Length: 163
View 1 (cartoon, rainbow, N blue to C red):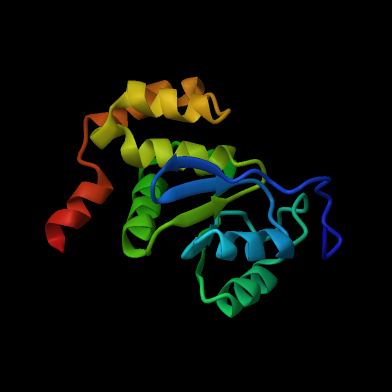
View 2: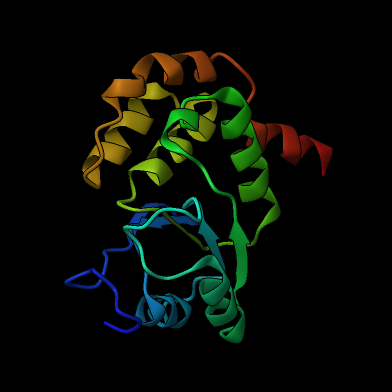
């Protein structure tokens, strides 16, 4: 691994749908692998003060753009995960970027939470829980939040109508 990463092996890119992949901490080699895999957009949701992941936002952006990938940074702290405001803001970011997208955080759990929150309305809570569990993330702890989001319009659907 390059850049002094604390990772012992490359992170697994986990697919939630055709346009949305998630991963834990990335390093320079992972960004190159993402580009070679056809990823168009990298979205970093790590807060800049997260010391578990070595690759800085600035360095990640430089590498991603050198591989002609769009790069976005939307820091999300753990306490913001089940907040509708942050879920909708994340949904808007997803809708405005080209896929396939790779969203990363420390372990991938934050990315899975946010994906679930923005897709609860269009896929249904059971499908969200099944898909995330299939790739190793149990979102049962936010099931009530998913149910609440499922009763509202998806931020993705709202943007589709506006386009």
